[in-house]
Length: 319
Ligand code: NAI
Image (tube, rainbow, N blue to C red; front, side):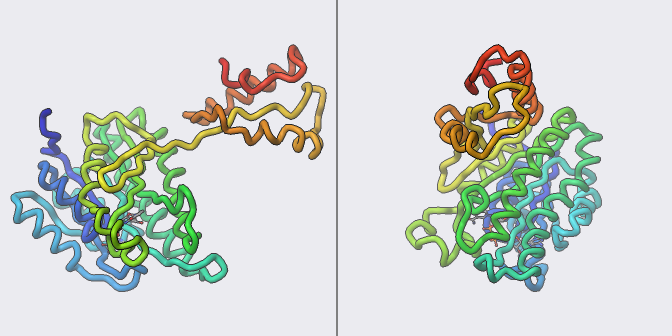
């Protein structure tokens, strides 16, 4: 198999001074990309700053013969990070939004600051960098964006209401960026990693922690950013050398009205149909909002025709 190379490409990796981001930056550097190593260098809860984190990774890339520059801005000022790429390398092709912090508390104890800071770093930060890179990607008809979600967002996790909400918000952001970018060859995909880092130390059991090397996730992210990869709008879970695609699916559902003339439905009718509403046996991914709307229009048309007394949701999916 030919080596996947990134010669001539410029990759921005946020939060690349440690953990997962560092591994992404090192691998991009080793595969020929010019790398912007962004890191604010603060604590895991978002306090303070330091240039050291980014500088150390730049030195590592350069020592191995790669090309890299440091950026110390917070992702909340994402436009400055993209400016660093343009100033140093004249272009940007790949943006990996990876920077992150935690402010774990049970829901009753989350302060406004805990909520806002976590949302600002994860969600707003990813929006700011992506928005700043967007016109450049559009003009060159090429761009690869990664957003970083979490199992805490996808499945929920005790003590992480602020983080879970921001992390699943990134899936929503990616869904729309993928649609808006498709015709310009701008792809946006989500990574859901699990890895040993300062964020998971003391949380993951030790035997697992030692197996979850961030290095094993970097090739997945790097491949997703390669020009040969055609995925757009995908969610990829990865850990310990495992990777799998995740999807949000919808059950077949049922129509709770008997005909178009029936203008309201009662809670009792909902109760009666509930087992069909919640039946996930034949759940499917709806790959676009337009398809969801079309299936609803079909329901309405069928109701209007009133051709069937009580049609099943197979009808919805059968067109
Ligand atoms: P880490 O703490 O080792 O690395 C995160 C880096 O982001 C740090 O170097 C930090 O200085 C930097 N950073 C924080 N706030 C920043 C800001 N405002 N601007 C620029 N840089 C900033 O953590 P790790 O584990 O490598 O996490 C990377 C990403 O993966 C995060 O988004 C995290 O939420 C996500 N994630 C990690 C999981 C894991 O198992 N390690 C699980 C699920 C998601």
